[in-house]
Length: 121
Image 1 (cartoon, rainbow, N blue to C red):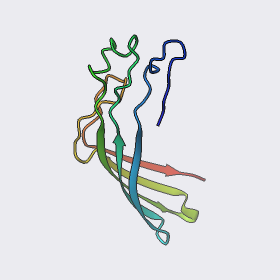
Image 2 (cartoon, one colour):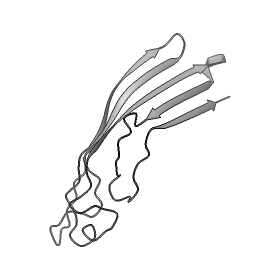
Image 3 (cartoon, one colour):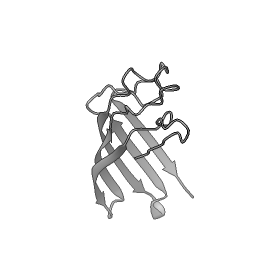
């Protein structure tokens, strides 16, 4: 949650992000160094707009940026001596929600998969 106000005009500060948060569950397997997470990213609509900078900004829809919710899944596992290697797979926006990050002018991606590997020594 962020709140900003111009001390001179009393108007909301430009490009303040909307209230947002994540809520989820994680299962861990300490014996195998693995986990599975299911979580949601919840973002409220943003209609507190600066009348000069935000209202005329083509990256912000008329009336403000709509809120959205995405559903996401992450899996990961550590392996090797002292668990120095890690592999991760995340699948984001499972419901293929259309969403716009406030002030960006760019719609978020649909269903997205990300595979990662990390090694430390």
